[in-house]
Amino acid sequence: MQIAAHVYADRRRRLMASLPDNSAVVIRTGELSTRNNDCDYEFRPHSSFFYLTGFPEPSAYAVIHPNGDLTLITLPKDPEKELWDGFRFGSEGAIEHFGAEKAAVLSELDCTLVESMDGVEHIAYLFDDACLREKIAGWRDTLASRARAGAVAPTQFINLANFVAEMRLVKDEHEIAIMEKAAQISVEAHKQAMKSVCPDMMEYQLEAEINYTFMKSGARQPAYSNIVASGSNACVLHYIKNDEKIDNGDLVLIDAGAELGCYAADITRTFPANGKFSEPQAALYQLVLDAYYAGLKELTVGSPYEAFHKTAVKTLTQGLVKLELLEGDVDTLIEDNAYRDFYMHNTGHWLGLDVHDCGAYKVDGTSRILEEGMVLTLEPGLYIAADNQAVDEKWRGIGIRIEDDILIKAEGPYVLTHGLPKEIDEIEAFMAENN
Ligand SMILES: [Mn+2]
Image (cartoon, rainbow, N blue to C red; front, side, top):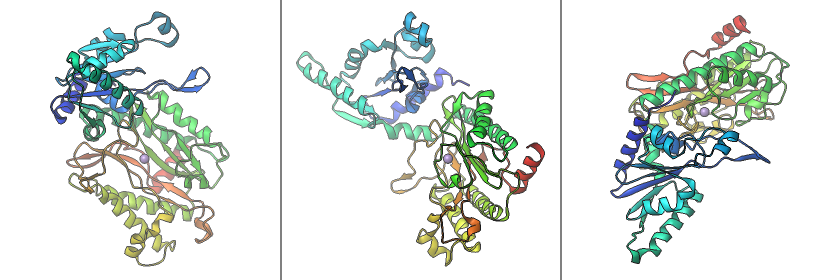
């Protein structure tokens, strides 16, 4: 699923319209990174670079000129290198397939950028790219040193981050189509895990079912490191070792999503290794599910971003009091963050090219208002540490999270990750039938 070159051109036009007059954008995708010795990790483009160009190769730079034209600076065509490492588009390919008006190769980077920046007042780049910052300073110095020859160096530097983030926050129809596909591949993977789990298998053996389904379904890799956490490992929020044995009676928490066309899905399900929730597991699970539904209701156009988290926290705190895991007045407990012993993360995050996608959560100090086309996760959870002596023994070591990907639509929240069991009886019936 590829997005057509004219869609990227339109994004560049909109970006330039949001920047001051006589601005140019400079952005790079980054380099291959070494795993060990002469082995590299597979390259994955920088998300904002990819969003603006669609160009997939490492080491590339892009300049968007004040008139909206694109110059791509890429690795050169090189038959010897391509024999070993694979195809490169080169300058001709950059123009033909990616809509660049001009192209250059990396050996021409400095002269191309000095020429591009001459006479441009504002340079917009990502301030967190320290390597690019240093290069831009060098190109500026070169122009300044040529002032008597008529060169004009830029005087203003703008952080590109917020401008691109505002655009990436609202997904277009092409992005939504890819994200729903990534979501549905991930749904299949979680179903496959529920079908395949059995006590005594290793967590990574269950993870294999996830990766197998991603790849078989057309997604080359996960969007982030899979979490397959059995028993109290589920209380470690970013548990990715996945190397322990799944015990009979454990809950298994799987947080895994496929990446497709550089877009992420992000799903968590928690289910019993033996197909049947114990009573305390079911009580906590139902509470998390109640918080999920309470949060879902707040995911509507015009609602402030913070509303669904607040609602989820309220539901969880009420339930924790009812289950006698907390004691006291609900509002006071919320004010005192008492729930944080059991619920220490937020109820969601933006989702897109990055699993924790860009986009400010607050605007002018207040919570952002949800708009049609925004995509976020809804992921309430509860985590009772195995060594928590303050609670009844039956709760200890239970970790639960339920996470779906939600598209904000005019008619209400749309669950991109639809079709994956999450009710207790639904999960138990699905596992009884398929496991
Ligand atoms: Mn998430």
